[in-house]
Length: 494
Image (cartoon, rainbow, N blue to C red; front, side, top):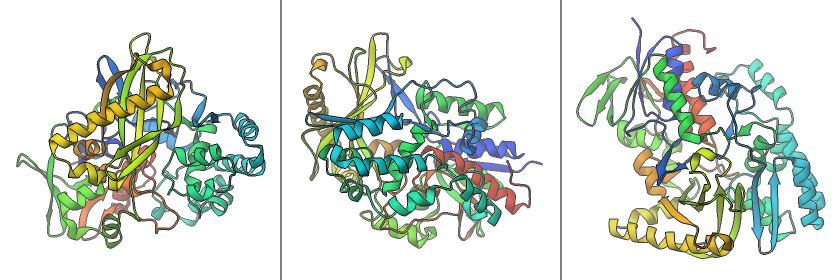
């Protein structure tokens, strides 16, 4: 008789765990609290347009990588997947100056040197290290703690240039990297895309993912990809329950034996996998007493372990809009709580014609948010929350039109969402859509995918490994099943 695995959460981590469970001969049942699965890898429709919540680029689109094999196993992409035709990572504007990080590194190097000849030496160095970072791939064959010496040697050979990148950029953050440049627009370019507290190598690896061809955007975006994964899970015989919120994990005599739903129904299982935000698992499904000390400290000291979220808006406009891909620009300060923001971006989704009616394009903007901003939003009453959103819709619209006058009278608001949206729909800690920010000054948290004191309980989801995101979520489901297989003394090559 097959063993039954119950999975809490139908995000990418939960779906991955389900598919790998089925491949390994288990029965897999997923309980998802929302009407649709997908977690944060989702999109929705407004006024005949599609709003994509997640994929700015998908790491693992290079068919020669182990991550591609995971995405292919999940049904997310295959040899014939069409990708959006994009040319750049992003553009930074500062006053009258503008620089772009192109997919073509030679083009980027030439443009940056022309814009800031005084920084030529540092520019050439940065581009050289981005080339080194192109060899960096997410280690997804098996969990790091299950690797042998031979596995580490193999991994080291495959990423032989990464130690150089880490030595040069692994102990500084983006603020410190920006200070290596003299040009104001280059300084701003370095800190525009990611939180300035992030380790500098994270920025290089992100850019290198795109320049190497390992970070493309599947046509149809996040929702379409999630639907393909759900389809694969169901085709394999998986059972997916939506609108099924879990109340707690049933633990008896130190062993997980199933889950209790919010409606009181008790579901028995041989094994339980929690594929939700770890703060939700420890805080609601298990209880804080099970939280590891280093994780409890991280939740308590969010200034040291921040998360990143955003106040985001979507608009529709004519497809004649001249802005392409992602453009950061300065603006009159926008106040949210006690903080002011003077830079935002516009991302044009015109590369995917399925997102808007013919002759139209969807554009989105984002004001980066962190824990203190989440706490501000959380402090508002329902009426204050609605009023603040309306105030910000007007403020952002005004600033976008000021930067792009061609949009005057042609910009129609579609929707907006806040850190509380991520908390409400995904149970996301402080509304974060990634794991803790990888700062060079803090100890990296480690998660071995199990819970001390509870047998037959495993963890999946983006929180098991920094920096989180889709690649980690996808790999985490596979890792959870590999841990189960190892415990049962079965082969883990799946």
